[in-house]
Amino acid sequence: MAVGDLITSDWELEYNGLLMGGDTAYSLSTVSGLLDLPDIKSGDQGRLRRHGLHAGDDFLGGRAVTVEFEVYGEDDAAFEAAMESLLDATVPAGPEIGLAFQLPGVADGTKALVYARPRKRSVNMDTSYLYKLPTVTVEFFAVDPRIYSSQESSSAVAVATTSGGLEFDASPDLTFGTTGEGGTFNAENAGHFPAGITFRIDGPCSNPRIVNQTLDKTIEIDMTLAAGEYILVDTADRTVLLGGTASRYSTLTADSEWFDLGSGDNDIKFRASTSSGATMTATWRSAWV
Image (cartoon, rainbow, N blue to C red; front, side, top):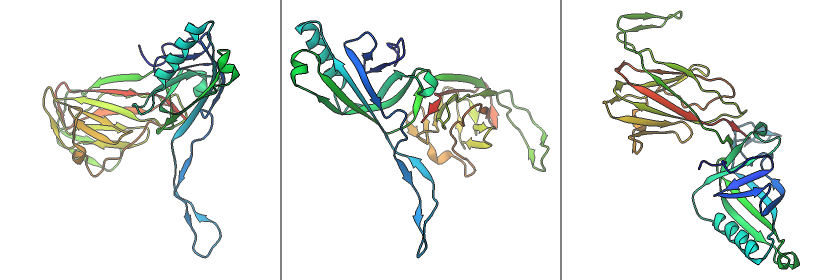
C-alpha cells in the first residue's frame, strides 16, 4: 500500500499505517507547522564598521510538524488497542517515512506528504485518560522541509539514432562529429518550490547528457554505459551512482550544472554522443513549502 492510500477525505493524516482524523479513534484538534516557514539558514554577513549586513543566500532548515488529537475507545479493549497502535506507529529512531495528509490550503488542497520521524510524544494521563479520552501530542521532524505531492510522476524517453556530419546552430557555436538527438519530455512541477528529480539512464550509450532546456542547465557524464548497465542521477542528493550503488560523481564534466525542477513546466532532453537503444526514466514529485 502506498503512502497516503488510507486517506479518503480532508482533515486526515496518515503515518506508518496509522490513520488519524475522520471516522477513526484519533480525533484531530490541531495541526501546526505545515503552513509555517521552516527555519532559515542565512548566509548574511556583517558589515565592518557600518550599519546593516551584506546579503547572502538563504536556505531552508528542517520542518517540525506537531499533531494534537484525542484518543477514544468505546470500551477498555478498544481504547487499549487504539493506544497500542498509536505507540507502535510513533516509535522513534527509525528511518524517515511519509507523513501524509490532506488539509485545506496545504499543497493546493491535494493529498501530500513530508518525509519525517517522530521526535516527541506526550500523553496526558489525567482524568481524561481515566475516561478513555486523553489528549496526545506528537511532533514529527523533517530534515527536508519540502511538502511533496503524494503522487509520484514518471516519464521515460529513448535516445534517437545518432546522426553524423555538421550541426549548425543559430548561434555562432559549431559542433562537428557524431551527435545523438535525444527524446524530450515535460516534467511539470505543480508546486511553487524547486523539486529534485531522479534520472535512470540505461545503456548502451556514451557521454549521456541531461538538459533542462527551461533552465538552460546540463548534467553531462563522461563515461560509457554498456548494454545492461545503468546509472542513477539524483539532483536532490547530488549523486551519480553506477548500478544504483557505486559512486561515479567524478565522471561529471566541468561544465555540468545541477538543477532542480522549477515551478511549472520543465522541458527535459536526453542526449548522448553515441547511443543505440539507450533509455532514460525520470521520477519526481511536485513540491511546496
